[in-house]
Image (cartoon, rainbow, N blue to C red; front, side, top):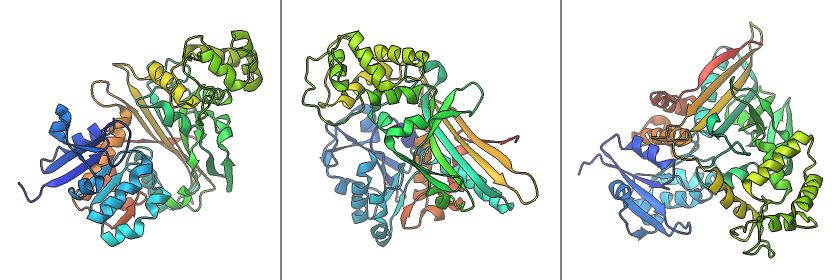
Length: 453
């Protein structure tokens, strides 16, 4: 066996793993092990398979992650972000490098000193959003600064969506995995910087902030803020900016429909004692909103009171969508986890998953408003429009998986920018440039355009 053999453990076998593994296995010295989970997710129920065994469906023995991590040079954590800290703790014990595609959480930040002491690098935010967005934001900002420009306004919006021809349901959305995460992401609170002031949006009002947003001709998007954009003035080294906004894109009509679902109780996660097997969808909806009965007339009357539709057309659209989903029907509902959200999610997954031959779309756009010392204010956009290939990888899987694979390979190769012990994210030219250069050779590139003011 070669002394140069690099052992890579990929935790998680979802849609992002295949393009990541495909990229890494182009080098024969890379030996990949897939760590997956059967049944209930638990880090002490890890099933390990060599790549060939995984492809062939061969079972492997269960091992604790501490031992699994220790046997590898690097571990790529593609499992839910809440478990990254546990993986990193195991990696610190065995002095194993770590890569994640997720944001640097508080739990990960707390491990920075221990990571430095162990001499390991924990690379984060190397997916698409976060990931590709950083690579091109840093590039444009550095270029503007080098020429004396000042970034006065920065906007960044991203959406993982069905391609327009596949957006054929009331949400204008489809799911590659459980709808739970996607729906809850639309119930986050948000903070951003607008004209020098911090604006805070409570979770209950987030969908109401969605506004039409033009990215490219042929699309009808709306955009709304996502999480906390304020720290990115510091992360991106743009202290001169008075507006910093990062957010999400959806097709027009999606946020108002999600808000209607919330108003009608369907996004509630707490267990309901009254929610029992044998109930019809209409009975559940009636109980959830306090309608007089489960008949259509009673339901619609109560829904109109709660939803406060601005127009008749909007009322008709939402009610038609609720009927399409089936939550007003007399059919019996399969109850999931004793709560309304998971019960709805099972239904949405059945109705709104990608079908064979359908493709997804990753749309990402930055907008920079730059003040120059010697010429008028200028607005520049940088846009990624990436469609999935139904015969290969989805656009989301490709853009996340390949970016992750590239960062991992650079770490294995000992690239100086990614070989610094501690917790890293791609917020510097030194880290972003090599990842971006390799990403563009894979056909993933944001296209820059100057907008006429």
